[in-house]
Length: 285
Ligand code: C2E
Ligand code: MG
Ligand code: MG
Ligand code: MG
Image (cartoon, rainbow, N blue to C red; front, side, top):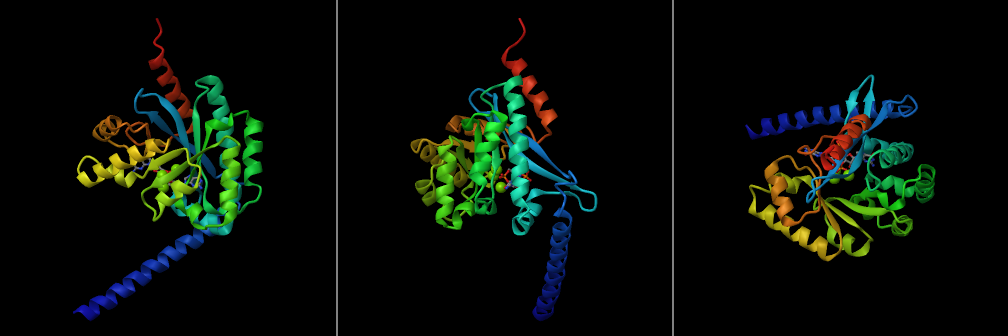
């Protein structure tokens, strides 16, 4: 009966919650010292100009391989790292490493290559964040406007004055600012009004259904028009099919990112991809 079912459901969820808590605890235990043990690496996912078909940049995505836990996805470990504070050092690792790599790609392939890096809320409580970004740009020689920082609503939600001040200082360096996962939060529109964004990334959940759902089509139409009216460039996340890509190109969406073009891959694999894309652009003879 319903009562028994309720009880069963209750004990089921309790067991599941217990499992989640244990997993979290294990992650917390293992993340300590993992950076020094060199368990983290960075993958890069291409961003493609939908008009020319060229790779114009990439997003840096953190990867963690731990001997006990195996591969732990960022959706699991980033929130733990936020809580433990490890995200500060992890974030610095990503910035330094991705910018050094970008400097090499600028020399080898394309000086306009744009690197995008994710920042999470806790990193904005680090008073050295802006200095660290500036120093990393100087040390690697990457021009500020080739760095794009992706933030989600979570960063802005804290509502602290210092977040606004830091974002202003960051954009004053000449760094580009992108709103990530647009459409999944509660007040994305008011944030667009209040903060100096250059780029808007439409969340993957809207792209998924774009060729089936008239509602999602209408929403994406509106978001692209609104973005251009506000002088924002638009990136569509999670493009997996030609159909989705063609639809977005026709709409005038500027850039695309997704498995259709490339999964997140190692720096070496990204170099090969850039080399191929150069050869296509400049055929020999
Ligand atoms: P995000 O910034 O929105 O990154 C895009 C995510 O979508 C990536 O997942 C990427 O692998 C995935 N993705 C891209 N194209 C497709 C597609 O066509 N289909 C599907 N199904 N998925 C696609 P990933 O690498 O697992 O990262 C998850 C999230 O973790 C990121 O979402 C970001 O919020 C966070 N994250 C990753 N690296 C970092 C980092 O270095 N620092 C911080 N603070 N957060 C990070
Ligand atoms: Mg992102
Ligand atoms: Mg995103
Ligand atoms: Mg995301």
